[in-house]
Length: 134
Image: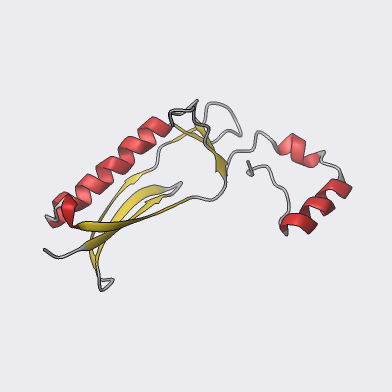
């Protein structure tokens, strides 16, 4: 039986699964829109249970579309959108909706963050603070 790799991307626009053979040739793909929740102005969240289900669906779709059995997958690669906050309990279950990097609820905190602290953080991390960081 031939072996395959699957790449999964949980992006803010779409959730995608792409199947490759071991030569790196794309065998098939599937995608669905990522459903963002904006309960208030400036909020950008994802229902983690719904996102998990979307991810499972696109994996199933690409396997069905290509007729590749699950047992032929030898490795999985996962990527996702940049910063955000995904809080889980001790059992790995969501404590609420995930906050995405497009969320701006912390903008007022960033705007009042002291300049000397900004410089200190930048010296340590080589990054500037912004409201989409956890």
